[in-house]
Image (cartoon, rainbow, N blue to C red; front, side):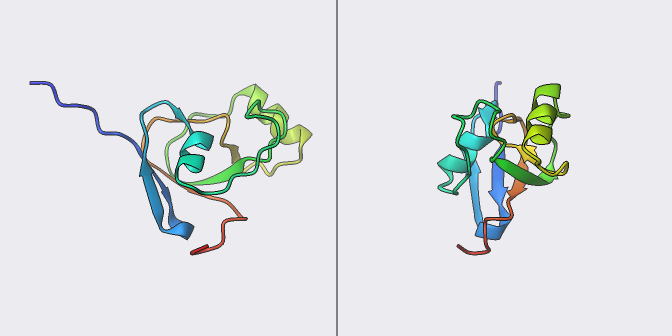
Length: 103
């Protein structure tokens, strides 16, 4: 018997939201799909680095050099990850400094 794989859940604790997404969905698309604002001016091309978020819980792959360079070039804090660079593979909790609670 074949059981469908569970879809990853992306949670936004400060907003009281969560959304299921297919595995491999770019995190920035999951954020937009939840109706949560996310900064971006480069068309998700790893150039502007404005889409930096905090991974509060869950597992994401290590940064690739292109993400590190974009963050360094744009003075993004090391602890943030660029949501355009990540694909959702498992459950995540995500936050951003510009997402006030309950907004």
